[in-house]
Amino acid sequence: MVSVKSLGVSDAELFPPVAAEAKKRSAHAHHAGHRDRLRQRAKVGGFVALPDYELLELYLFRTFPRGDVKPIAKALLTRFGSLGAVLGATIEELATVPGVGETAAMDIKLLHEATLRAGRDKIVKRPVISSWSALLGYVRVALANESREQFRVLFLDKKNQLIADEVMNRGTVDHAPVYPREVMRRALELSSSNIIILHNHPSGDPTPSRPDIDMTKQIVDAGKALKISVHDHLVVGREGVASFRALGLL
Image 1 (tube, rainbow, N blue to C red):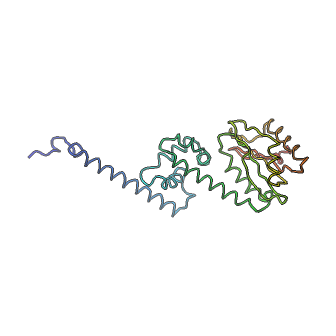
Image 2 (spheres, rainbow, N blue to C red):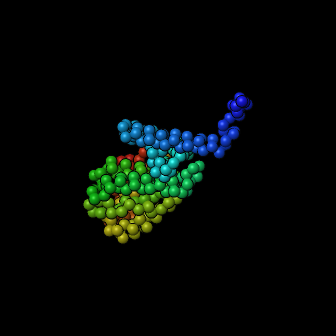
Image 3 (cartoon, one colour):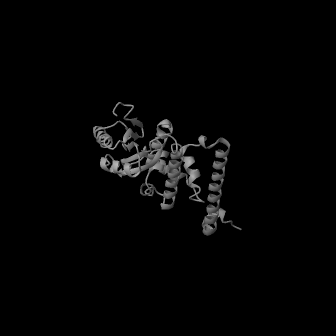
């Protein structure tokens, strides 16, 4: 009897549906094993021991119950450059990465919002100026990886406790229009006695520009007549945070 193998015919060629199903089961078992191994490594060594792409993988397991998410995690990091930048990207930007749909994009933004709120908890109900390191950590998470310039204001009460953190305007990659009257109007609405101005430089360099300095002076002058003080203006970039007060500009 002549065997099919002696004729050079493989099982996959003779039984293509069976071979395809076996291959699918094998791939599923491999990915399932990888997930279990990654979870075990995180459990034993802690999350800090994992590189960024594996940390992102672990999170994406919840969005994608099956399949290999490593290519998606690596594609996200390649597209945006860092884990912080992935979290800071918009839903629309995230969805441009192959394999990332609207659900995954929203899940990633959920993680970003949770991180923001955890950071905000550290500066709420305590004098902000006495929790400066916590404040700097919060503003980095909030603004360092924004792809467009954003102008925000922290409104404080007489005890310098946070009343509200509000985005006053969003702009282009290098400009966000600022209206001192609107800032002061909102401060009066919130009964805020002091404010801290925040904005980001998407270029990464937090060095204040001439327009930044001029705009800050206008807000300071607008606040004087209303007895609303500007404690500081923080410019946030991927390279750090610049303080107007520390630089002698305020």
